[in-house]
Image 1 (cartoon, rainbow, N blue to C red):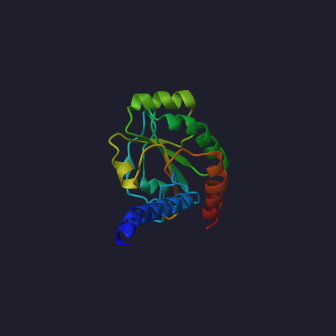
Image 2 (cartoon, rainbow, N blue to C red):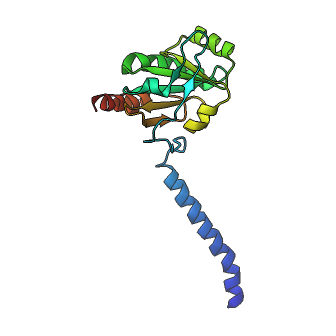
Image 3 (cartoon, helix red, strand yellow):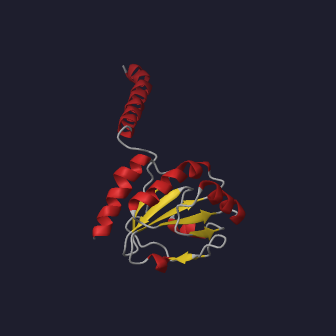
Length: 181
């Protein structure tokens, strides 16, 4: 009898593990693993002062005070940034909110060429050549987009390229709500 139970023990352990994995898979269907939680949400945007790209003026956190703004971290070497770029142009046109670009860990000449080729939807572009501001914002890569409210708090963060759905269903409604408050 005891021997029989010893033979069943591995089978029972296997069944328990199988149940655990099935439950995890079922739970993952309701959770989007591409959505990274941001510790920066509802926190004040980090203090910064950036030099401008090329002949563009730089900007600082203080320049953003009192208005709703969108910050987009991008780089010329970033393939998803190229795909996202037309959507940024659309966002700049439709949102009524100033869009600021932050050139992340990039060569200025490459970023100038990128913006010359694809156009610039940005009010101005600051440079973050060593990625220090990216660290302060908690960047995981580029492109990443932040929406900052009038009080300087981060109200939206997307750690992946924008999509038309994200713009229409997340960003624009939030922009409208924040502009009213």
